[in-house]
Amino acid sequence: MSENIEQKCLAKGVKLTDQRKIIAKIMSESNDHPDVDELYNRVSKVDSKISIATVYRTVKLFEECGILTKHEFKGGKARYEELNEGHHDHLIDLKSGEIIEFVDEEIENLQEKIADKLGYRLVDHKLELYGVKKKP
Amino acid sequence: MSENIEQKCLAKGVKLTDQRKIIAKIMSESNDHPDVDELYNRVSKVDSKISIATVYRTVKLFEECGILTKHEFKGGKARYEELNEGHHDHLIDLKSGEIIEFVDEEIENLQEKIADKLGYRLVDHKLELYGVKKKP
DNA sequence: CTAGCTGCAAACAATTTGCAACTAG
DNA sequence: CTAGTTGCAAATTGTTTGCAGCTAG
View 1 (spheres, rainbow over the protein chains, first blue to last red):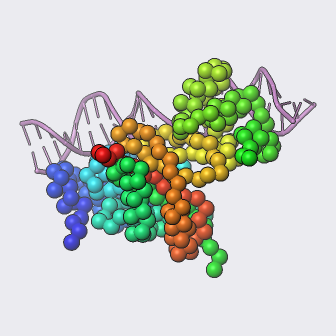
View 2 (view 1 turned 135 degrees about the vertical axis):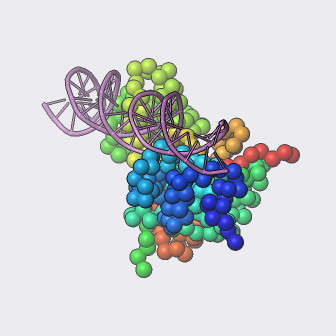
View 3 (view 1 turned 180 degrees about the vertical axis):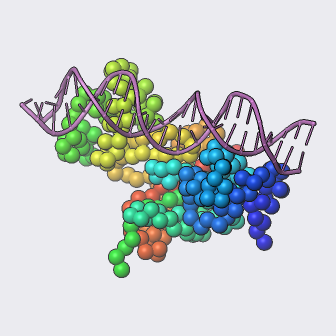
């Protein structure tokens, strides 16, 4: 089964401080995509002494360890989400700001094919759809 | 044929000042995707008195008028490019930073289909591929 | 122990804004 | 004429960093 964030830190030789444990816990419990400010708010409720600098540092560290991914959606601050095995893309509701995750095999393959055709090996990609809810 | 930037401004009732004309001209002559700083450099060569604030303001105005599009590629400043009828996406060479434009009907359709399936009308999207050149 | 972490406040980088003087229409 | 624009410098916003003290392993 999928190991949790603390186990991943252990595996990477990353020191597990109290503040990191708290940030890790909050992130694994979050089903949305909080920005650093929001994450800082949530973290502060558990330990009000944690500084925002630590949150920034931790979030970057976790990203480098492959524990979190960073999203830079349109015109805003960076948002983070836990990185689990299943890759997915995002559809952002322009009215509400809600973020819907989706997976589509076909589109993944197509991207590989395009990169290949252009003479590149695909390393990473970003697909974001922006839309508004349809009337039924 | 496609109208030029100045015509578009006229049509939108946007006042055409000297600085806007210069910025418009530079942008239509640019085949790359300059960030504001780079654009400011190019513009300064024509009129060294134009301030960077004006460049920021103009670029935002032009974006709102549908004259330019803004790209926020990974971890950098915003880059701009003229918006012509032909939509395209980008592949970014992670080694050189080079940006390759491409069009793929199939992927465009697929995106519509996905949004639709999720109950949304697609308003905009962003697809960026990040890759490295393949050895032949 | 000690390499690595933390909080704090100051530093940065990109972008925005208030204001008084100017200019396109 | 006058609403809108500009240049300047100061202000904001998101993020990073130097440093002295603290802590996990």
